[in-house]
Image (cartoon, rainbow, N blue to C red):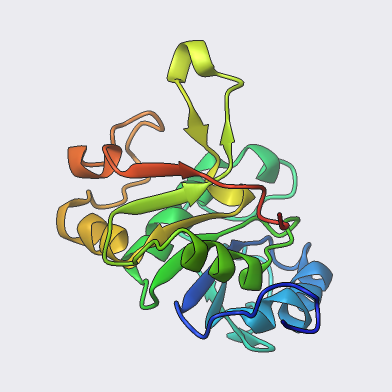
Length: 202
């Protein structure tokens, strides 16, 4: 057993962590993430959208890279960031199209993602990255309108096969598209959703 008293952490699969954050407003929390749980990620990426009036964000922060996806109206605006669904959609699109690890996981900057626990879970359930999986925290608050939903940024993970399928059949991200446009191909909408505990642990 490991120092935390739990079962050993498997060396594989590899895990990529993609974190949307507002620069410079969330700089301190980004630095904290980069120095704590993000060190367990095989690859870590902060996705920002810096306003033109501000100095650019650094390209790295500790072990994490920092990617600026600002484009036109797509910028981190403190007055509207909480409702900026376009930024989150763009972050999801970026992560899925640039994925290189076995699993690509998304989490907000206020989420503590326990990478060792995720690796343990994948091994325990014998989930292969070659299968089509989207793992995450399921909520039912809109059950009657939308069915069971996975909140992408509470800590959800896509298998390598899922990101590959998205790149092969997914649409091109376009800010002009209506926010409710069907961005996901049928193959992706059928992906297997496995209910898992909250990402902070068991």
